[in-house]
Amino acid sequence: MKGISKYTPLLNLPQGIAPFSLGEGNTPLIKSRQIGPELGFPNLYFKLESSNPSGSYKDRFAAFAIADVLANQGKLCLATSSGNTGAALAAYAAAAGIPCKIAIVEGAPEGKLKQMRAYGASLYVIKDFGKNSDVSEKIFEKLGEVAVENNTCLQVSAFKYSPVGMTGVQTISFELAEDLDRVGNVFVPSGGGGLALAIARGFQSWKNQNEAFELPRVHCVQPEGNDTIAGNLRKGLKEAKAVENATTKVSGLQVANVIDGTETLMECKASGGNGFLVSDEETFECQRLLAIKEGIYTEPAGAVALAGCMKAIASGELDKNANAVCIVSGSGFKDPEATDNLIVQNPVSYLSSYREMDQYFAIK
Ligand SMILES: *Cc1c(COP(=O)(O)O)cnc(C)c1O
Image 1 (tube, rainbow, N blue to C red):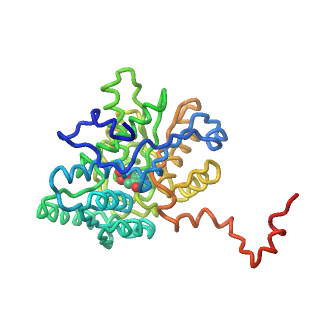
Image 2 (image 1 turned 120 degrees about the vertical axis):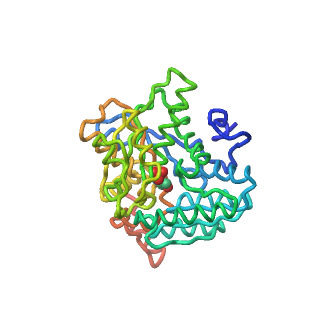
Image 3 (image 1 turned 90 degrees about the vertical axis):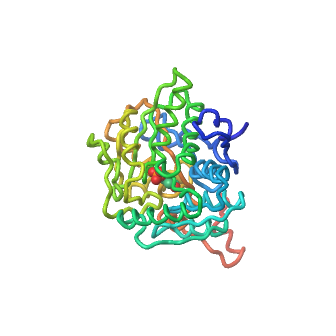
C-alpha cells in the first residue's frame, strides 16, 4: 500500500473510515545541502509537505475529513480557511462530488483563492476574520449552527472541530519515524497549533507501537505578529492566549483566537520542545534561502520553521550534533505575490530579437 493508507491501522479512527485519497503523503525528506553545513549544523532536514496534491500538508487532513463526511452521508463540505485548508477540501470535495462552501479569512492570497475557485468551491471572504479574535469567534459560532442545520460537521484544520481529519496529519510523524533513525527535533510552523499538535500526537502513537522509539522534541514556531502559543510556551505558562489582532503578513498563520493552542502548548512542553517567535522579515529571508540554497520553493508559512530552527542554533539551544527537521508546510506556487520579495534582484531579460542572444549567451 502506498501513501497514508498503510497507516490506517495505527490511527484511532471511527469504524470503517479509510482515507479518500488523491495521492497525498509519502512526501520527500531532504537533507540540507548548504544552509545546515554553513551553520555548522550537519543534520538539518526539510520535510517537503509542499509536494502534496494541492500543495500543502492540509491534504492529509482533507483525505480523512472528506472520508468522514462521506461516512456520515454528509451532502456538503462546510469549512473555514486561510487558504490551504480550503484548497485541500475543495479538491477532495470535487473528487467526491460534494459541494464545498468556505468562509475565508480576510487577506487570503489571490493564488489560494484561485486554486479553490478552480476546484469549484463557493468562497466567502469575511472582513476581519482571522485578524480579530472576537469576529473570528462569532463566525465559528454561526458556522456551527449552519453545520447542524445541514446535518454536517464544520471542517476546520484543528482537533477542536475536526478530530478525524486531524488524525490524518499524524501520518507526517509516522513517515519521519520511518525515514530517520533518530528524529531528534521537529520545528513546526504554527497558526492555530493543530499541525504541531498532530505531529506531537503522531509521535506518541508511534511510540505506543514501537517501544524503542525515542520521542522527538516538537517545537512550536510562530510569527511575532500572531503569538498565541510560542511566547507562553517559552515563558513556562500553561495556557495559550488570544491576540486581539494578528499583525503578521504570513498567510496561513493569522489565527488570532485560541483553537488547539493550549493542548499544543502542553504537548510541545511534554515533548521537551520550546516556543520560538520569528519576525516576518526573518521568515521572508528563510523563504529566500530555501529557494536559493536548497532548491526548495515554499510559501512564507513553509519557511517559518527554518527561521525558528536557525534561532535555536544561533542561541545554542540546539546542540550542533542534534538532528532537526523543519516542516516545509506549503508550496511557493500558493502565493505568487509573496515570491516578489525573492526576485527583485533577479529580473528577466527581454530580448527584442534572437540576434541579441550573442550578447547574453556568450560562449567563453
Ligand atoms: C495551516 C498551515 C499552517 C499552520 O497550521 P496550524 O494548524 O494552524 O498551526 C502552517 N503552514 C501552512 C502552509 C498551512 O497551510
